[in-house]
Length: 126
Image (cartoon, rainbow, N blue to C red; front, side, top):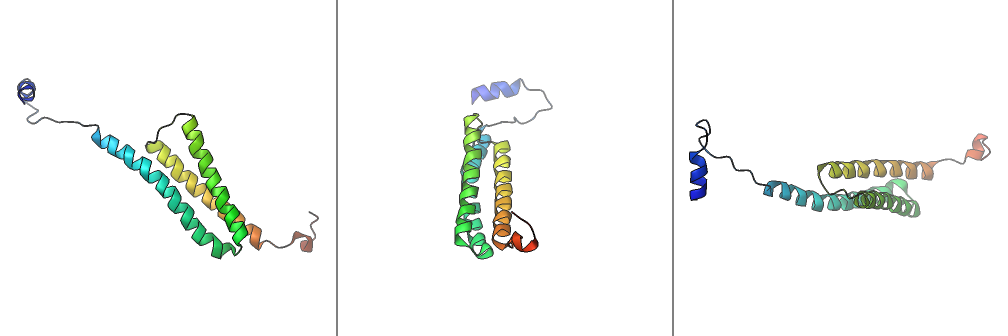
């Protein structure tokens, strides 16, 4: 306490009370991002499973879509870890964007695949 009082006595007059900065708030943010990112990916996959099965109407295609989504997310996380990126605000934004894009793309492609007509009836030779 005497150390702090000594430092305060040497402070400019415009600074009546000390301002203490702690990195603990930053560490708490890091821990929250680290825990929250992976749990959010899990919740997104579960919600996607609950929506895909009734919307697509085909359990096999819904399972393949979930497998694709999980694989894309695993590859992105593995690539970020491979390059040595730590979980911070930028990586959490990247993961949130990745979840949104891969769920959106895979769900639309699965729905279009199941509900597409046979192109040979339209005169296309495929």
